[in-house]
Amino acid sequence: MPNLNRTPLHELHTDLDARMVPFAGYEMPVQYYDGVLWEHLHTRTSAGLFDVSHMGQVRVSADSLEEAQLALEALVPVSVLGIPEGRQRYGLFTSETGGILDDLMIANRGDDLLLVVNAATKEQDVAHLADKLSGCSVTPITDRALLALQGPGSEAVLAALVPGVAEMRFMDASALDWNGIELWVSRSGYTGEDGYEVSVPSSKARDLAEELLASDAVIPTGLGARDSLRLEAGLCLYGSDIDTTTTPVEAALEWAIQKARRRGGEREGGFPGASRIMEQLESGAPRRRVGILPDGRAPIRAPARIFREGSDDPVGEVTSGGFGPSLGRPVSMGYVETEFSGTGTVLEAEVRGRRMPVTVADMPFRPSTFKR
Amino acid sequence: MKYTEEHEWLRVDGDLVVVGITEHAAEQLGDVVFVELPEAGTQVSSGDDAVVIESVKAASDITAPVDGEIVEVNDALVDTPGLVNADPLGAAWFMKMKVDDLSQLDGLMSEDEYKEMIA
Image (tube, chains in turn brown, cyan):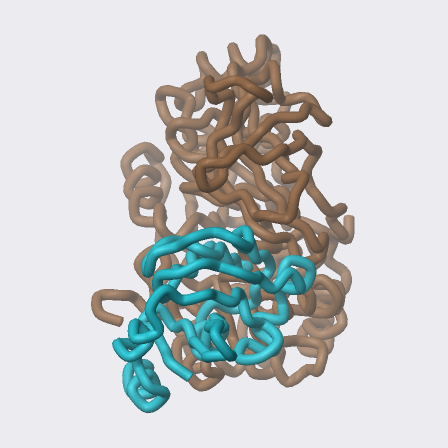
């Protein structure tokens, strides 16, 4: 495909007959031979291997780790200083108006911070970091691939190659040796399952992927299943469920804003959009991201509008939706006016010109199985 | 069998025409998880949206391939949408139509012409 970037695993994908699609400027596998449904179900019961090398890996360092942590706190409402060595935390880059510029992972590696950001936003994120982080060096890592091994079988498979991963807990991050090669491993992912994300030098990415795929427990899994897995897990897709027009409180992500950064905390505020976000943390937001369960069988996808029963004024909109293979039913998420965001509220969504009954539901739709 | 550019197949069965989608279309769609059928008795013109079919990935419309009346629909697909992937040319027919003018079928593709199109 013209003008698209390729990941270090591109040849492996084509050798595996993956169906390739353009995604965030990359040519990416949307599914392999087994299809999205099977890849999804297999990940929940065994393990799926995903190429997520399109995502941005960025190193942030300063004269001291603490200096880098405090500098980054000027861009995210997260207690970066509170991330212990060897741990990672979910974060958000906020805008001056309290919107979300991107969501990311921040790992404390002892000497520096490793950020993992979204593919479509990585260039803008790096520019933002380079512009705003005085006294820090911001280094995009361009010589490494990123693999995600997800599902209950992940630990046994990866530990057979890298024994140290068995000791890790959810959101631990460490550098581990594999045949003399340094892997950067975190026990995390985007599926609601136990699993790992593994940063590997590009030149060794195929070797590692093939060693993992050699296990009967593992099948290659594409972006299609990645999307249905994260939807069942209630996880946001940047650009669909969160963006510059949604605040962290509207997005129901206030759990990502630790006490230290809230009113009365040791390092209160000091991030872009703090005044609006702090106000919403205390008084609530006008709308809320919620789970939406269609009563019928039809998947309700974005951007279906949501109404009160019998009213023509929309009270919300679906931002992600589809069929949940592990639930055997359609699932959606979206925003509704806060008044209608209570679990169990019955509303209607408009699909192909017709109203379909839906019910506001808690997320995740399916309990997560992280190893805490 | 006749074929359309929309990847439908048509099979003449007595004075009715049975309509489904091709193996190629089913494979491209991926795992089908939802099928919404029109009501029997609906009068349609060629090109009208008739069936909604959703895979894990996306929703697509299947259009009426010819003018006529939809006289029967395959309700089995509502309960078992996966039939579309399992047996697109057989058990997963969508609808039977009473066609206004059977000569409309002459304008559609033969199997060889369809195979050439998707090659």
